[in-house]
Structure formats: structure tokens, C-alpha cells
Image (cartoon, rainbow, N blue to C red; front, side, top):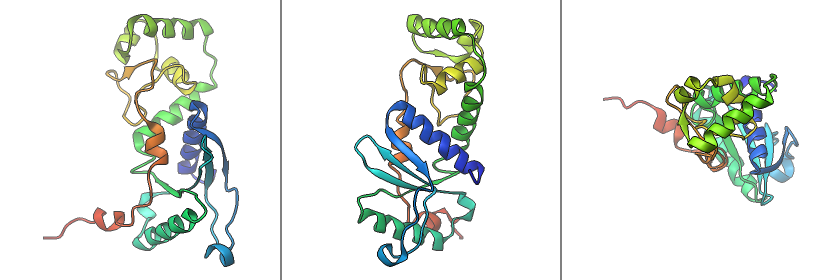
Length: 201
């Protein structure tokens, strides 16, 4: 990955694939032809969902998105629509938000650490018997945040990934947010740059 934002994008795609929303994805899978497409362009990723819809994805830091770049994104969206593809732009402010980035990086880090199977079994049994609980309750029962993050990466339990995790975060065995809608339903906003400007009295 060429940037931290692209790494987060990769983790998001891996997670959506684990959840079953995506069939597959690939980094920089193709470059469009200027003559037939109108411009030469290489998406950062292309993902395919279970309905075989293709999503070319551009990952960009919002501070570098100018009005000119937004117009380019709108043009790419229209061009890809001709091929029944849904062009997406993921930026680090509106899509790959700070809580999402933090949660995914921590989940991925602890996912490869050794966790005793018995600990996982006990945590999942507690949630099954007691229902969803805030993190502080799990702390008092002897379960730590790394165990929770490990299980979350493997979809054994869930918490709101779009929110900062804290002692009051509810941990559940059922998914509590539609992350696929957040990541796959957004389109380039041609008015976003203009609307982001502060009003001058």
C-alpha cells in the first residue's frame, strides 16, 4: 500500500469480504484506456459484491481534494456508470474516519496475536448468556480490550466501528451497524468542496 489511508481501505475491504458483502477485491487492477474511456485512470481498488456489481475505489486525503479533483471524480463516476460500475471516493474525513481507522488498525494488530481459545469461548458464552454489555462490564468480568478486538476482527462479536471505542461501548454478538452501506453507498459529491468552505459575513 502506498499510504496509510490505502492500508485502512484494504482492511475495510478485507472485513467486508469476511462479512460476506464482497466476493473479491484487488488493488490497482487495471488502467483505463484514454481512447475508449476518455482518460487514463487506475483505481486504487476494485471490489465486487455478491450481486457482481463492481466498485472502482479512489482513496484520497480530503485536504488534497480541490474543486478540480472533485470535478474529475464526477467525470469518472459518469464514465464508470456506462460500464455499470459504481465509482466510490473514500477520504479520511467522511468515509475512513478517525474512529474507523483506529478500530481497524487495533483489530488487525491483535488478530494475529496468540489468544487462548478458552478465553474466546468464555467471552462469547458470557455475551450469549447475558446479552449485549458495555465494555466496562466485560472488564470487570476479566476480559480485556485486546480479546474483544481479536474477536471483532474475526466477526465473533461486534461493536460500532464508526464510533470511538470506550468503556461504555456496547459489545454484542449481533452486528450493530451497516458498514457496507457506509462504505459502498457513497458517491462523489460534486458540491462537497464548495459546501466545505466557511461562510464569510
